[in-house]
Length: 468
Image (cartoon, rainbow, N blue to C red; front, side, top):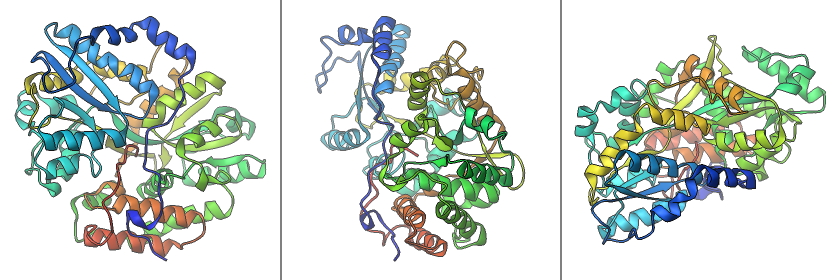
């Protein structure tokens, strides 16, 4: 039984962590002045009659904590541009995509939006010719140099398959999605283990944790993306990035049906058969999996850096001592699958494009990475403090994440090729593999079928992927 599209298996759309905000965090936010938003925005119009000096921004996130601190981006811009008011409105991933497509069709979009690069986000907006080409300000204001080397071009390259001009810049990322391994320091020491630097050492740790009655690998995979990320991490650990890179460019020479891809699927199957994953992982979403990790009975947990806000909150709540490392490569060192996260876009019909472009440029200033790091976010910038959060109680594990980011080999997101339903196919079939319904050969066969067809036979378009 092979699944090659979104409609093949019911799936919860990816989302940022759905987490509650403790009263102390809200109180802190109010004390810090973030709540001044309610007074600043009085009298600002949300409709087409907005003042030329009001910058309308739509920001997508499902994280209540991010909804608080993201307003600081708006307030900082207002401080630097006294004549401009910023109305930054946050939406869930699903809501923003729906509302933005309607607003674009009506010719009344916001001036700036923070959206997903996965379909039907930016690809749909490009296909409708509704986004402004930002190549000129990117060139004159040196945006590529302000971001990690090659990131801006790589982030925008897939968009040409949806109608963007080759080499054009339509979206600018300011944070990263990077895959790391979270670990419980107390359990590691109790089992007389150290952070594993080889695949053999990692598997030894799994076996010892299982024997001692702990959960070796924490995972909530109801929404599919953690199993997906485990698969792409294992592939990246065994195959050099130079071999995987052609996958992003729809190369006819690329093929999923090769030994390393089958072997990675076999590893996941073996771990599942040995009971290494959280019990009932298929019915638990990623956010619930993180919360369960902080009960203290789980050794490792694969995480995306976009979960950092939830991790920081849970760590503060429980006091559990944690760390982060990159997954060990077969060739030595670590590997960290890495991509730009959401991107800033300027609609072609924006009423204040100059201010919108200026906002993006401000986000690329040296002060922005410091703000992002304070909230656990990994900045996409070329250079930043890189010294952790200093005063934060969570500084140690966040610094370890940054260190891993800077020292690990960057991995390729195999599910991010510009192919409709490739991501959904990988998520669905990895879930079935983990639950014992498919063999490793079925997984790679289904992936290759969708990849070769460019998704034309994969059913309905993929849903919004807010998390990866």
